[in-house]
Figure 1: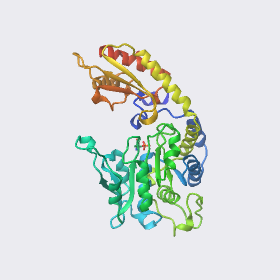
Figure 2: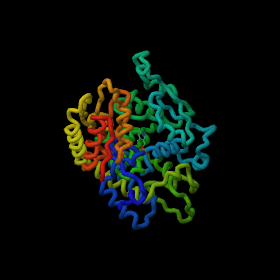
Figure 3: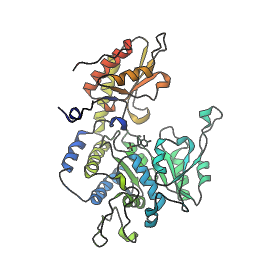
Figure 4: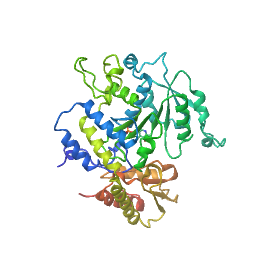
Length: 408
Ligand SMILES: *Cc1c(COP(=O)(O)O)cnc(C)c1O
């Protein structure tokens, strides 16, 4: 019996991608081993964070780095840092920001569920730009001058969510924020692989950059990376670390916290609830080093082989078209898209996905193409056994619409 069997929890086949609701992909084995070892000893978390931060900074080409409890927590900590700087009274007052610069400028078309993490620190979003392509009413999307016009003495930061299709161009936005002296918070949580994006975005000139540690890096699922300007990382650390310290004995590492720049020790900050364990910090760093050094290529090749088997295994199911996309698509992983012809039996991708989830074991596929009557298979969470189950289950459901339960 394994731990999930003990708990009466069924394991699922995750073909949906690095989804938090499914626990993300399997952790890189070397990271899991490192976590186990880390669990056997105690270490000062600020010193561990400082060491982790310098490794992150080297790999990303930033001044400083920090391990967070996910990219979303990284957004909250980065925003808190922009709202407070090194002002301890401001740290104490968050999330209340009245009467202080508290606006974060964001392009309306980039708004998404994760901007709640920015608002959670106490920032007020100021939306600019209109995506006229979305409504078919024009030829333009958000433009850089609209961001610049919104900058005022109330501005705390500009937020930018980057994908290969984001507009306005990141380089233009960075040029504006640098010229105007306003920090840019860059969310590139899911923009890996390629590993070269670590440095591409890290050294882009953005002031604070967040990546997820539990997606393609395959670190602990509850981790993320915050990297950027040293003063912002210091402000983030002061608002995240356990601050139950005595002033006469407090001895944080200089590279993370320069005590000469603050008049005392702040109390627990707004980020205290986003704590990261020693096991998670160690696991993230081991996974990140492996990812950055290209060891991830083996995993990518394995993912490609899984998809080849799936394409071969689902060959020639009537009314079904199977398309293999290469790794240049969003998120950097190869994918398989299964499109259902609309026929007299009116098979819908939605009903197929529902049946897959109801099977035993449940199979989860990506649903972001349901409106095109298509299912997407993301390979990051699959192993060989999962692929066998997936082929069998998908073959059954696509062929006759019925769910066949596997007998163990
Ligand atoms: C996944 C994601 C996040 C959240 O990352 P976590 O590490 O799960 O907190 C934030 N922003 C974007 C754009 C993402 O894709």
